[in-house]
Image 1: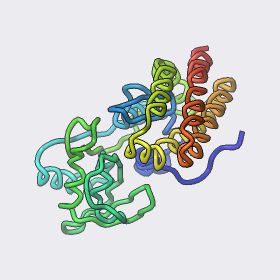
Image 2 (image 1 turned 135 degrees about the vertical axis):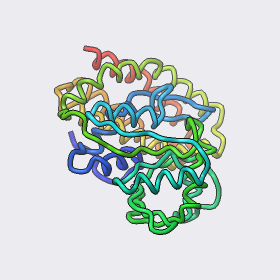
Image 3 (image 1 turned 90 degrees about the vertical axis):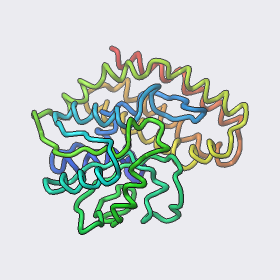
Length: 293
């Protein structure tokens, strides 16, 4: 097995890895523990290669717990309250901030308006009214006025956000957990997440047959396919590490199929795209069966 090594949009997993420091497992393990690789869904006519009903907040909470950590999660209030809360929390260490709307992070090239693209960063310090942060998508030690951060942090266009100004701080390692133990404990939930994945694959293929709207196509091109393929590739490595070799082999094949969608999508070969997506459906069922063994 040749693992994928390179860049990718793993913002929440990379952010969590930064928070956990020397105790952090490989980021691919964190992504696997979130449950993200195990399924596909359609949310408001937008396809995603993650499980039905899953979103990053669910995934982060799962990974933090499985790895034996706990933290304080806070949200809500006014923008001024949130900035004060962040300032106070930073006195005790870095803070995981998000979801944010990536389109409103004004240090990023091309940021102009809310686009509903979720993102997570690690706040490191607040100097006067400027936040210093690590943005895992290519911006170490970025700076941003706190007022600008608050605008993105409201997350008004992020469908799964349960309130504005979500942050996690005060990370404490409550118990020592090996990577292998965390992965084994995550597998029953992975089986449950895979329920309905085959139906979702068919639904995505039907959307392609009907003609993808430009904004749906754009998100798949820029984000959905590459993160979906990487999640499955990383899950395969993680599964192999705990002796789940049949499941790992299936996950590799699923990753190859998802990765192959990029060329068909970008070149506009929608008939081939739909056919390849339909090939995913039985693989999800096979993966579910292998994980349940």
